[in-house]
Length: 242
Length: 232
Image 1 (cartoon, rainbow over the protein chains, first blue to last red):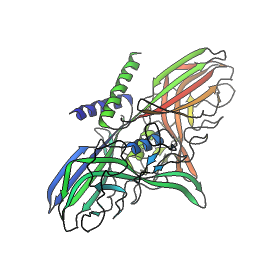
Image 2: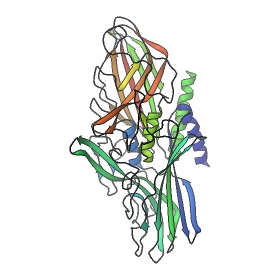
Image 3: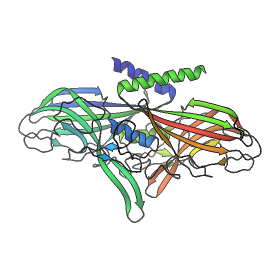
Image 4: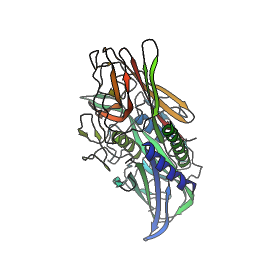
């Protein structure tokens, strides 16, 4: 209820002040034999520091070059916990975020990019840079999920609410022959770049890092039956002024 | 004054609700100051800038939602940018890279140039979300109707009360021998479109109402502060 009111206030005031209002929603669905075992759609309140830093770097044309990760500093923390920084803004440049392997589009079999599932149940934190527990690895063996390639991005314009959305969708199949117990968390990993130089003959010079933009905890851990399929959709939206 | 109070109240509500929802809250302020050589301030205005244009929104969406800038149509529901000449620019990416803390990149213009950075004009046309250029830029120089346009100052970054800010400043001197009327202010970015290509894209255009008189020999200081509120 508080979120509902906050959303109404944010939407109205952002409109009046001509300021961007960004939202994220997460949809989780698990089916087996066509039957829905789990279906939740919730507001994602889980953008982490990396997402804010990437946005600030681009909105203000700031270099993401701080050596310290934390309040007041602009850089990124990679999924291995190292700090990514350089004397240049952090961006998607020079890659095409709509292609597999770039942006949020993790490719087939890849569990280090895009939407990734894990077994942890640690509380959500703004400082999260990876899963709190073990990743559910890609594969068809015991305890593994088959990571499908991220679906093509879906952009939708809702004229009534003046909201532009991009949906990032990925499927996961349990082909392991057994139940996977304790699925508890979801992260969204983007592949960001620090493009610092370009040569006509040599092309781009850039550092690429995989960084978590969002980590969402499920309300309670879920067991994934054998042959179940999971669909995860992150929808990130921006409300435009009239 | 009442308008300003209401805006600040709404800004406070937006900040609080954004913190509750754990979503980024971007804001921008504009400060205009005109001083005479003796140090007298003839004008000083500080106001919330409510003037991000479509280019800026599209870059925000591209960045946070990970969607390419590749639409061939300009307008609602499409992601791309328009340069200051009015031409559409689209591609896999648009944004800032390279060393943007030095003049010639990002929002930092070299001196005696007004293609990008903070730019000023005499235009009085209404603000529009689809603006891509100033109405009438004030020419560079010391002649009639011209302002001597200095290089952008080095940006200043700060972090106070969960708010990360970047402050951009530029000075303009009136050596023209007569008064110049300031009607509009814009923030233009040099946006990267390829390894060896870029475009000038308007991010914000603020109408100065009523217009400000920049007297002969006066100096105009324009400050834009872009901020993002982080959650605790």
